Image 1: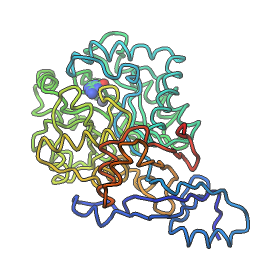
Image 2: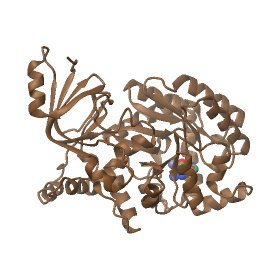
Image 3: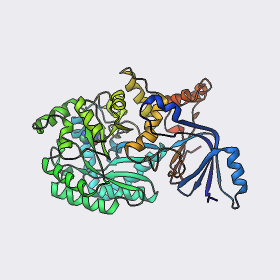
Image 4: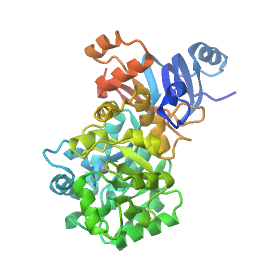
Length: 440
Ligand code: GUN
Ligand code: ZN
């Protein structure tokens, strides 16, 4: 018999399998109305009906604490595949598109993270924001300062959170206060990898900011480090903005396309996650697909900076791994429900119908797969890590009114993402423990 440390009652929703086309999603959607889940500390050990769960609990010799969420909807914790923690304090900066936004707002903000005490305070605030919004795993940019990443990993480790992060690497086209030399970048990055990669549930991501802030010498260093750590992640930006793409062309004229620069330095492949990917040529799509690279789709950021519309249809056709990113602070919310709502509108502008099933899939199991973590998180299979969010689908008067008119599960999920926000986050569990509770 299995040790049970906690039982959870509620309505459970997840996806049982990775799918190849969106039409397969409905058959993989798993909904257990009035269900029960058993945890053994940080792991899921059983999930089934409440009746069967109660029978099993009655046979159990020791008393098991039961969390009763009977009117709530419990889903796997949200996975945010692209976010910048040192941009939290500048979210919603007015008036600019990407390159001016970086110069006017981003670089001066990130410069403050040379101060470890400041980085610690902001790390605590940032992780609290993730948890308040039901996000239990994220792939996170730090700043160029190694202490920014030390502070973030320290805060995540204290909660035993599954988090991937890295210090930004950048050596040109920005103020001195956020630049480094390639040699310094390599030293600092290697030190951080040795300290944090595969420590508890943490992983390290090599983080060259993007091509315009990277010299060939810096990209060579990234290549060399990546070759030494076969299971290391890499995160960067790709093809976000028209002026950015022209700039890349002028900086690296010997390369045909933006992605060719990364690919030339072996910075494509499994566990390489490219944010945005809005203006890709067919060859770039094929390169992402052939190398098993992943994409982070960041709808609120893409609309806020006026960068463009991501093509979900092509990402399915090309079979590229895909997750959702909030991209705070160019993105305008930490909340995945709001982010999915904007993803739907990005689809609408291209005549693509993003179903609620597809949206929730990308935000959970799909995102986990984009991060090569779908053997550990992303759904409620027995043996998976117990990271989940308890949603209150009727948190507001408007939601209560509207849910009275929702018939199917798909409709209820769609209304939840369309009207939803942080008020719908009732509890967040990380590693089997409640780490956020809504005030009432
Ligand atoms: N490209 C390079 N740096 C950034 C950044 O910080 N945010 C976004 N959205 N795009 C970038
Ligand atoms: Zn970004």
